[in-house]
Length: 246
Image 1 (cartoon, rainbow, N blue to C red):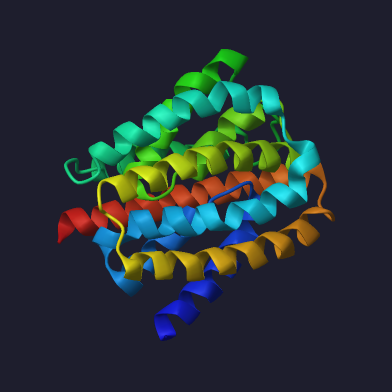
Image 2 (image 1 turned 90 degrees about the vertical axis):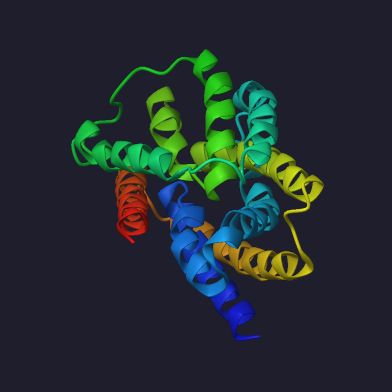
């Protein structure tokens, strides 16, 4: 019972932060969930908890969804989720996480500590290939939400538009991820229970985060997003280095 309670509390805290930081809730939960239930079960549980928490965020931000981006991202994202599920038990994704972590850490320099609005140009067609790559890697690792933030920011999305569009993309891809996990018999009754506890906490955290977000300016939001990427990247690098040094 204590594991369920802790997953609920940490889910609430992580997704409160991720709402105002443009994502990163899943990455914040990966080391905690790994500690509570073990590393092999972390990816499916975190993905399930994130998926269950997304309907609340979708309702809260529905009017801000940029559907033309969703239509570009989701079809390739579904394919990436299926491919990622099949190689989940075969590939060591730690080196990929290390590279991605370093990229996220570098965003604070790319955006000049939040003073710069964009660091590189992004076109609409980028979101198809990005959907495939991020969904595949997210299925392997349990969450790579912040990886998309530089592309959303550089495309020009801010605050509610970014969070709403990103949530819609992640929701549809998350359904494919859980379908793949289930088809491959990765999920067990215990893992479904852990994911439900995490998802309930995430739902409450989304509402709390929405209240905070309403009080933020675009500049403050951009800074939160950048620092969330740096923290998430740092956590990824530390986790991989610790695993490699064991």
